[in-house]
Image (cartoon, rainbow, N blue to C red; front, side):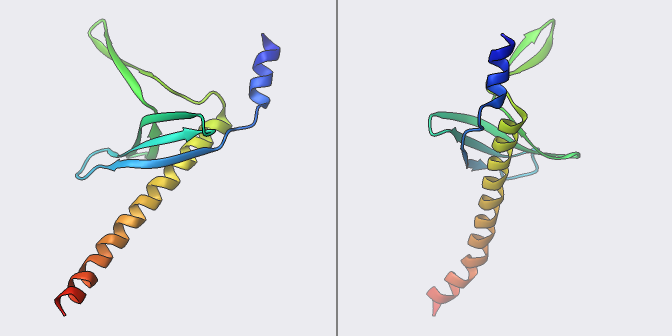
Length: 119
């Protein structure tokens, strides 16, 4: 069993591609929802980009349930190694930053387009 675990840790981290499915408007902690494709073979949906007092973090998709009147949460997907988690977080953060930049550019272009259409 120890040999299998060691082989898993030595495995290379697959390529991770992420995209932002939806940006959230308003004053919410959840800023965006993302999806990721891992190694061109698996897709993960429902990843959340969250801004808190401690900074930005990525939350994996979760299921919730009640136990003794208390709501508990379980990740339905998570990375096994630190390297894989870092690759996923980096890909989602990069996609989020790119989406924000595109949104800013669209807002910046909007007045120019209106002016040129009026002329």
